[in-house]
Image (tube, rainbow, N blue to C red; front, side):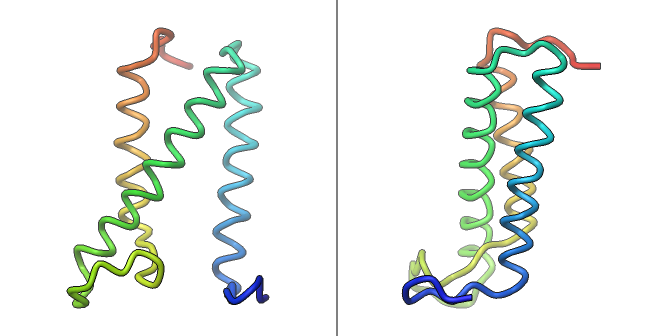
Length: 102
């Protein structure tokens, strides 16, 4: 699939699909648990940002390319996972509603 001058491979489509499904499932689960809608949206946005930043940072650290090429370097799934964990911990520390969800 080509969008503008960017070509999106099949695995990229599945990554986007998995992100959208995880956002949907997390939103529905947290709403059922009684968490405020504004807090849910804020947590999703924060964790998504940390995921992308972590994936990009790890990719730039492990590639042999010394240039800081942000748009062509790709993303690392391990960096994304680390970013999700860091974003979740930071959000839990910053949020006022830091109760344990069972």
